Image (cartoon, rainbow over all chains, first blue to last red; front, side):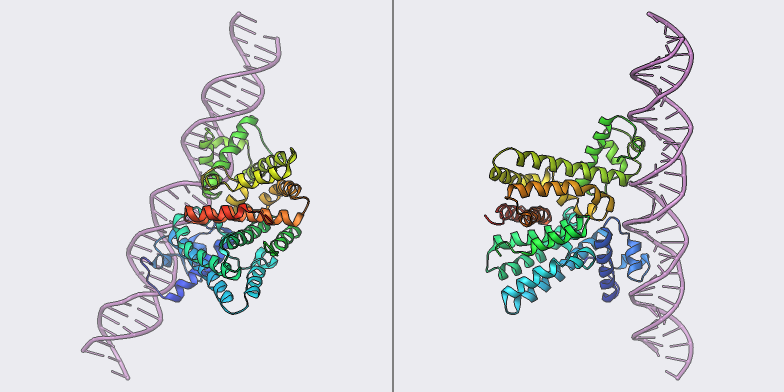
Length: 182
Length: 182
DNA sequence: TGTACATCAGTGAACGCGCGTTCACTGATGTAC
DNA sequence: TGTACATCAGTGAACGCGCGTTCACTGATGTAC
């Protein structure tokens, strides 16, 4: 339910993408509205034609980013071989280069920013459940196992980004590649 | 190697504790030097007698907090029964009330703040390795397994704090209580 | 086809505010004689 | 024991700056006649 938004939808999408990139790179509080609009190729004044506040943007970006992840996982888990689907999801998620510098999942890179914002937590709830369902499907319907696997994947990325050392980061991601039961 | 620090050591410790509490609750960027000193029962001007910059404080707090966790795990894993030690570490870490409101481990609550600060990453490296060693000891010397278990624990706490729902948070923490191989 | 006007996406100067940091100071404590 | 002085932990006013937000505006586009 977007509150007050004028302007062209493509511009809105450009702002969401730009904000997503900068939020993941520097965190929400370290990213100004001014920088976001510049990244989107616009000037800061126009921002409030698209979002009522910066906080509203944070929620929208969170929803949008996790919905994208959820859609991808659903597509992967929908077509055919479940074992291959699981492998593809896990392997992509834990790719070293993607983890250290590429376009990441929101869960490990903006976890604290989302966790501290009730509105963002709510916005993220539905796609999070969808991701768990995709995992559960690949794992033969065990909900506990899918929770455990997602936790392991998210935690591995979090730790790899904290580890001040490419070796250790790589070891963490490799260890987490092994699924809970093989 | 603390750079320039005058003043009483007890006061320094009070500032570290106060900063730790506020950083975990609101994040680094949303916590001002002013608020930290007020929480410590002082006025903001005195801060720079103890730390050269706010960034230096962030590194010191990160090191200090994770060293405390590392020390606890070492004590637990040092005395006697390894199975009981493992259970105690995991069970304490994943306690629902502690996760949602209590004094948490730094890794899930300040992960993004630390990951984006090279100085803080370095400060945190040694205690992180120490924690992994304690886990490894409890797990019979398997380094891969200890990496996987820490990832699962950290990820579970991250997800539980994002989940906008006490039920789901509880389910995540319970699922993660089951160790990788029973 | 040409002129007048309405629409509206995007501009950029300006605002009040809170931040990190500095610095001249206060006042309690300890030492010298 | 009493006076003079040095030390130094902590104070609080002040600074420059960048933030989120507002608003009067510009200028391109489309419609009316």
